[in-house]
Image (cartoon, rainbow, N blue to C red; front, side, top):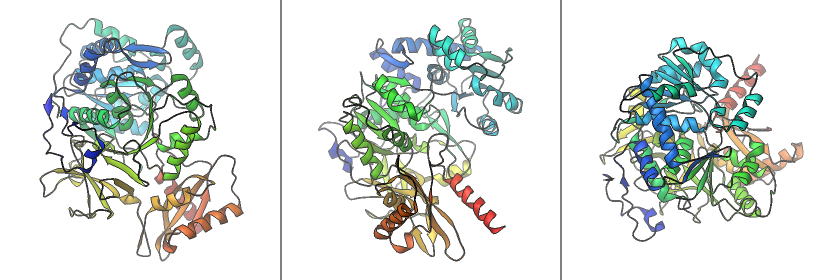
Length: 579
């Protein structure tokens, strides 16, 4: 173990939230990610590491599976520093392969299996991956582009690989006609064949890597531009795991977490897979999320911790009351990945209470460039509108956009973050890296997030919105998130999103897209009510110029609001009107 090299944090306002004697300057392991996991294996060998459709695996068994997969990678010629792409949902084989890649000193590139064909091609070429582990259901997309990449080995996996015999038969029956024909060869193999190759490998499989060595490539969601590869180190992920274990006091040995956020997403991989597996927890792997079955899954699996994006919890409260003590298992819900309004938090908290849970929603904040999570609301200390306090050893400051000038408490500016979870940089993109990672006058490296927010006198952080989402209308700065909060506070509204649309002389004005609560239908009378509600609570220049009711807001592949889709659809409508 080594001591954090960051400076003393005694002046940090969040310290008062911790028990006396807890040292905020945390110790971080010198090990790689798999090395940190192995520390948990040595402590909890017989504890359950994961559950998957009723099948469980202990920490010791998971280690043996990882080692076997590592032998398979070495048998396929994977060397230290090579890139291996995982294009899979949340399955045991995905977790096993992730740690096996780290064990042999390679770098895991995580890709969404529902990505478009050209996106998969782009990700493979960005990372220069030599091996691809891909879901059988999407293999056809890979077959069409594989010759234009540097991939020389393809391992085809299936959700059924990890099921017991009867369930595997049922899965294959239900999947008939959905899996494309796969012509196996020396370079294209099934996951089980891949493991068999490893049995003949007799060399060393463990490569010792340094904490600062690159370990993972994640891709930004692309909601505000072209997706970029984000290069993260062993230290980035291990720091996150250490910090989360302290911040989420409901976690620890004997607890379980619903790993429903995808493994190719920073929040899902870092907070819902690596953190719990380094803490002696059980991860409950869910490969295919169905909003209608969400509450049913909770009742069946009885998780203590649930992490998700706001849209996940919107689907939960739509299910209605599910039973007096049906959700008593839930100790805490952590919301991140996208902005959660105060009204939605209140609705989810009430839903938990009605169904027997003593837990509450703790709102967090982070971004993939900082290993997904950097800030969280302390238990029982929610401040309206706040996203909580910084993690241990994570520094926050607010600067005037475009400068390094630090602003005073409660002044809005760009959120900047410094600490051990900040990325190494953007993959093959030094220009964007230099724009985002900057050394300030204090000598620290700061991540410029592109998010607008503020910090109050107590150290609580407030998120306003993406800098690029700010609407400039007739010289006024409009903050869509603030407008959304007002709209969402109307009792008939479930959620809303506000974007800027062109205007002939104001340049831009606000347009609101509104989703109503279940059972409430759009009407002229309701629209009038919402408009009047906005007129009471918003300044005149902030009022939306247009309102549109929707059944649901468009979402990205990871569940965030797809602002660009709304903007494109609005531009298309304008073009049609102007024809």
